[in-house]
Image 1: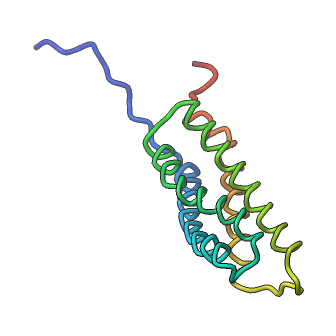
Image 2 (image 1 turned 90 degrees about the vertical axis):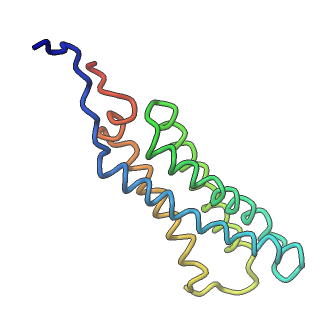
Length: 147
């Protein structure tokens, strides 16, 4: 019998930290709810300063599924770099939104569900950035430097 000398490379298994980073990215889809703040700012029922962070949150929530898809289905330096840039921009957006909410408020903000969400997103971005910069993740997307 003839045997083929051509071997196919083994499929590389996605590291668990990549899956966790993808799930944390998917959580940001909930930021689509910011459309309510945009509409309320247009209607004048909330301060106009809610409009700017609302747009950033809405765009982040809108693009989150695309980043998750790329993280799970694509490999390469472009996917890895895009995810890093996306998380950095989204992290800055959360910080700006929190700063505006504290600076623009007429009263002292008490801890509530309204403040819990931004801090949840902030934590998710920080953890995702840490996971995406791990050696295992870089090797999964970019490849080993010794190859």
